[in-house]
Length: 372
Picture 1: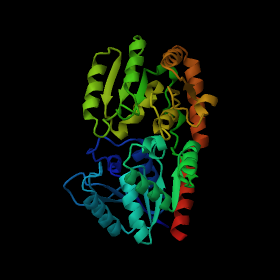
Picture 2: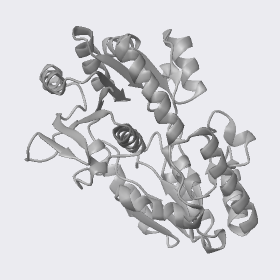
Picture 3: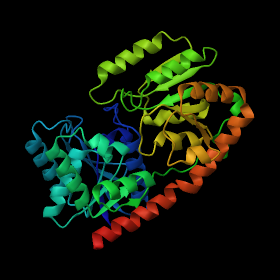
Picture 4: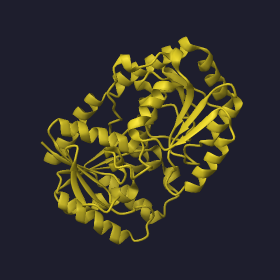
């Protein structure tokens, strides 16, 4: 058995702490993977943010929870932040450390593992983690150190073929495709499509990536349809969150929910006619998989899931706002069509993103880097 430590500032939210509103799909996937590994007999630790004034270590749900990560946003105080992370890593003494996204933690953990016998696994969370056009905004030294830290990993996990190509072609880094995974609820828990109530949007309220205001435009264009928007503020975008909330309040057929506890989010997918995505870029959207668990079709403005949303009968890839309005309107009107797409999406999820198969592959990966 392998002792694996997941290094994630916000993963504690999935332990029901109620202390963090910014946890999303990346954290949910790490938590699900951590629990699956725990259930298969592995020793699993979580290194997360120091979110309260309680003990810095506790056991919760059979997981070792270490609350030592400082606020890692920005580069101010980087040496002190790094030393705090290193201190915690040394106390945890895991065989393998896993970081998903987050360039600062990637660099801190990579350098620690260089100095010890521990193995380091880095997982790409979003296309922006590796796309040169997005990394161009980094300071040159930060960009160089970050890419070198990814390169130093004992294994790198990409979510999609697109990410794998970027890693290889732009950075000379080999990677393994290890996407996201979910278990399926019983078919009896999937409501009839005739009983669905609203068109749904779920994501961080992030201006540049998620473009939530386009969903507001969609709701304005279809005033007879009910819309629901769910999501926390993005880091450092609290003012924008309030701006979107204010604009949403003026749209009669749109309900703005803001942050929803992880334990309550499934109910929104169960009641949704369709899930709409307006992002400029993604990694592999957990919201797609979460929707398909409940046979809810996906309508995406731009992101196409490695082309599968264009070629598989699992939803719609619109490509323009006019087409997005038309696609959503047609699914609202055609219950049979959205049911067919939704159940096809659920089957696609089972074939491609099974948690059971994913955790088996991660077990092999973690064992390989630990022994190798």
